Image 1: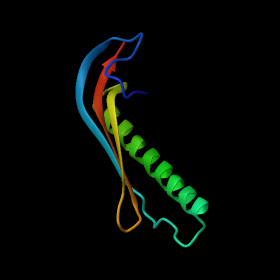
Image 2: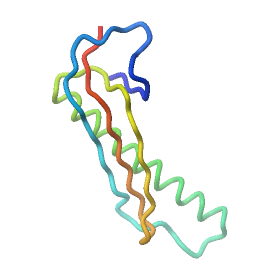
Image 3: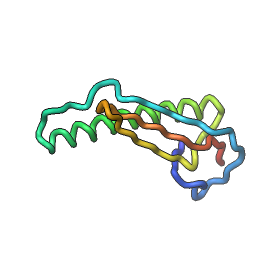
Length: 98
């Protein structure tokens, strides 16, 4: 599965547009508080990385369900909530390329 933020893929031709796909993930634990600033920032980064990976897995699964072999125009949104949790949403267009 090819994933890209661009609207085209160099060396490939989009054959069919399958539809818009999304992947959303919410970090299921609290971001640790009470650490030094560097440990706190590392905790935030780790939380976002884990959550982003889950969101991309869901995006990929949804694209495969539509018969796509690529997703173009991906937009990633990351939100830290006031309750110190992380939410990541990824959206793109599932396509078939050759």
